[in-house]
Image (cartoon, rainbow, N blue to C red; front, side, top):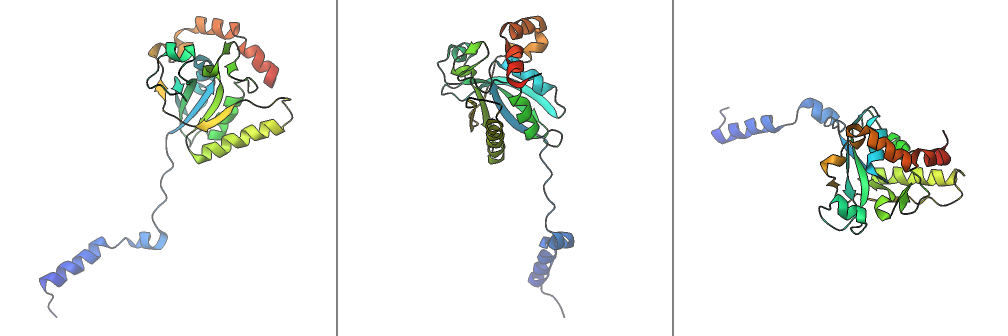
Length: 207
């Protein structure tokens, strides 16, 4: 039986467009896990929030910046004056195959005073508030669970003041703020000690 040209083209299209046998039998292979993810935390001065995350295996980089406010492209002077609504934050870029978001949350809590309202240590104002800015519903649920567990633990006699809110536009801080503790170790240590950060962290969390 001879095939017409139209019938032959149709047959070839059916063969070429048909899914492979393995795909029909098992479905498409699952997507590979993402190699990079974002987490955003506010814990007072961003100089002091970079080091604890940079130490973690699986953290690719940390970036100091501003988020949670109204003004676009704010400057450090504007944010530190308290008129933009932004908080100083550190944005953590990490490999979720090597470090979990849960681990990042654990490190975050241990490096803030969760009881302080619109301040952290010697820095006061809403720009120094503590907050978790979640990037998806999984992060939101995990952040809320850790806060609830801490509140129920009996460790604290007053309510936890740390906010949990959806991630807003992030603005990278000026270059001299990035890796400040590496570029200016003496000034960084002087500031951290003078601000009473480690003393208060010990009071809140113990040694």
